[in-house]
Image (cartoon, rainbow, N blue to C red; front, side):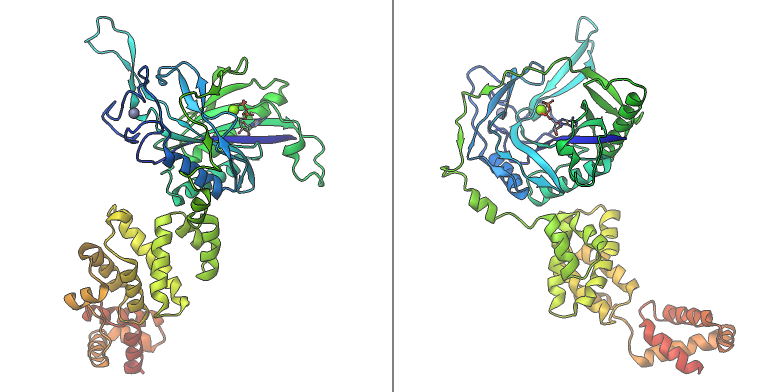
Length: 494
Ligand code: ADP
Ligand code: ZN
Ligand code: MG
């Protein structure tokens, strides 16, 4: 028996308008190399950094959302290492006085959250003919250099890949609700490193409910190159198994950095940690200390008051208030924009209808509207349908003024024209045929044109009735009230 232990180190690019220590645009996706650069983020001699207040505020917001302690005194430090993606030869980071200490998420304790700067991007290329010699060359793009980077470190308390994945997904959601990062793993906005170890399991008594805190931990291996949420789970599970197999064979775990190979679905050794890296941290002399108790610039109480409702709270509230299942609630919460749209639509509904119709709204929202948005590649910003108009459509359906077939067409039209559903119905002469006379005429025609089905129904074949409803609906161009048709058919055939 082994005790698996995982601790995560997560880097997150903040979405501030400007970089961390200069006024260059913060746009790590900029395609033109070295567009957003200046003497500060290129580390020209004598250039002086200044702290991006917004980045500090965003970090504090996350700290508050995760119940961490916001430092009264914080500071930036220089972390020395030499690599071409770091023009100064050191990274401005935080060492012993991070902005946030402690806190927790999904039952996992956090160690710290601090702020630093992102590195430049390297492109390794075979050199072109313009060079005398054909040598390998590396190109450096500094657009990303100096982008505000938040680092969150958990305690080693995670038990398996699935738990790590759930942690990371919830963190992404919180970042999106706080609007401080897009937290897109595929784009590198969110980068996850997993520290993985296993230890021979001591007597795990029932009274010892938190063995990870007291047990001696095994040698940890750091896994990098994890590029998706799925890979978080896969890489950790692979690594746990690899370590277990080594211990079973009587081999030692080598403390090292391993990379996740997405194609081979395995971790591979990148470098052995012979000894602790000496980063020679020391306080950044070009930046002032952050005294957050006395600061007139940053008001922590104010940031706290303006925190949005967080996903976990919203999830529970939606389930309770709207009578949705946990799964349904999750579908809405997993995207802040759908949660907002849905809630606004419900509040429009409420004045007109009982909440039982919230289910109807949910169904049309998650199947028809989501479907349309996906098929036509429509983002929330391009959506021409307001929550108010969508709620009105649900009212019309629920009142029996529209069939579901017509509703589908109207949703498409609402997106195309931006009109409200009533205007569209009027303009397109689409309202449902509910007047008894027209329906009876169509019913009589269907009966006389389909003697076989009529006969079958009279012999007790229920499917024939469905067929006759369909025939009648055709005559009414899909706009007949289905219940009225069925009722009239039964009368005429009785
Ligand atoms: P280092 O000094 O090597 O960077 P830290 O103590 O700073 O190590 O921890 C870095 C990360 O590794 C944290 O997320 C922590 O939870 C995790 N960690 C530390 N020890 C272990 C271990 N034995 N097994 C798994 N994760 C660990
Ligand atoms: Zn700059
Ligand atoms: Mg560390």
